[in-house]
Every structure is written in C-alpha cells, then in structure tokens.
Image: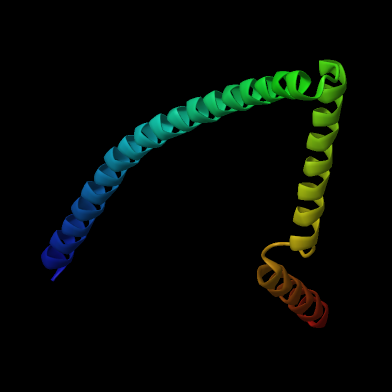
Length: 123
C-alpha cells in the first residue's frame, strides 16, 4: 500500500512540476508579448498627440488668415476651450463614479469584521 501511495505522490508531484514549468514559460512569453503591445500603444499615443498639436496649430493659422484676428488671441481661445472640455470630462467622470468600486466585497469584509469582534468578545 505504501509503495502505491509513494508512486501516486511522485506522479502528482511530477504533474504539478510540469504544469508550473509550463506556466512559467507561458507567462514569460505573455509578458514579452504584452510589453510589445504596450510599446506600440505608447508610440501610437505619442504620434497621435503630435498630430493633434499640429492640426490645432494649422487650425489657428487658418483662422487667423480667414478672420484676420491675431494668432495669439486664437491660441488663447483654443486653450480655454480645451480647459473647458477637460473640466466637462472631469465632471462627467465624477458623476458616473460616485460610489466606491467593489462595494459588495467591502460589505462582506465589514460583516466578517463585525462577526469576528462579536465572537472574540464572547470567547
């Protein structure tokens, strides 16, 4: 009986070792792949930011040419419009997320804490 139990435990240990080794290989592969994706995403965001700045600059000079207003006043107006848009976005985010995340989990922790305090006093 002990030989069978020893063989079973050795097989289980071997199986677990193989799975852990495979998980290690796959996690390194996934990390490298995720890093590549993050680098490309960062490059895309940086490129989009430069494109946005250049388009805004071109818009300012086109508006100066069309309306005959100094480009400094147009830049000031465009900057203020961006600040207003950012404030509106912040307000929307604040309204959408007024309650904390994981509320059910926090409630369960509070219940557990109350149970522990009441049962530790009685013991």
